[in-house]
Image 1 (tube, rainbow, N blue to C red):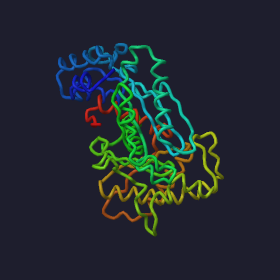
Image 2 (cartoon, one colour):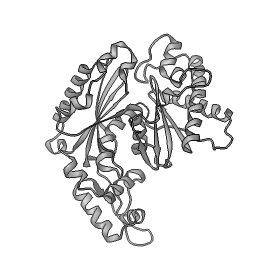
Image 3 (cartoon, helix red, strand yellow):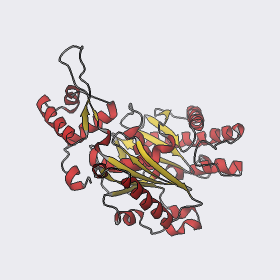
Image 4 (cartoon, rainbow, N blue to C red):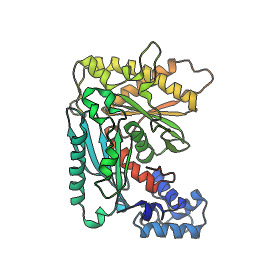
Length: 370
């Protein structure tokens, strides 16, 4: 297996930077990597040779016919490392095995009346054992760790969630599985997934809004995902709105369900609210999201806000357009309004973000501690 000792210690910052550049820009020849990192051609040859030997990079076909010498683009090796992601939602728990390029190789999920600690532990242990048993021994050794994406303060969701108060999910799992375990807020991990696996042309600073049962957020500054001292940065759902209430009271799937008088399914196939009800909800949600976006931009000078969520793409588009329209109507003297775009990962963002926690720790230039 991959451990702190034999991988985190082996990979230099330049090696991590090479992997991050290839992840962000796609296959790159050594000359381009040398220019981007500022190292010599000989040093780049040595660095990439080691990464290829360790199974993290692979050589593509030689490119000929251009000015200068033929070049060999280097790409990420999909099987270079594997990552497990566990995502907890209000009614859905998911487990995924993700390869080094961000592709989900194995996935399972279970719909629950509500989350119970022991039920989640049983689901996770059984799923991890099943995934590992399906892999050949050498592939099992490439599992770098398990990341967990969970809403914080689950006990605030109602008395049926009281069992989560004081429950150490990360510790319980870490005691039983043979690789590192990481845990972060689910909206933060969705932002991390967009940063690592999503749009390739993102600026170094942006806000990520994730619309689920309640809205959440994540923030990237100077190219790095920021967690905050309480690991709860960009807790957008708690922002108070003009006129009373919080963002979660207006911009949430819970509010749409309240208007419908019924629950919506945890997948796109059964998402069928009447168009006029969804449109009115999206308009009012967009007003709240625009206020949150402009507030964040005024504090951190953010040029971009990304809106994604556990909603169908058409609903995400409606929310994004409503937010853009509402943002234009807000006074913004003294600051530049941020650009508003859609996220690229949708319902998979949080489980991919969970898997990205061990990936970031071991392979990104600014790996986060557990």
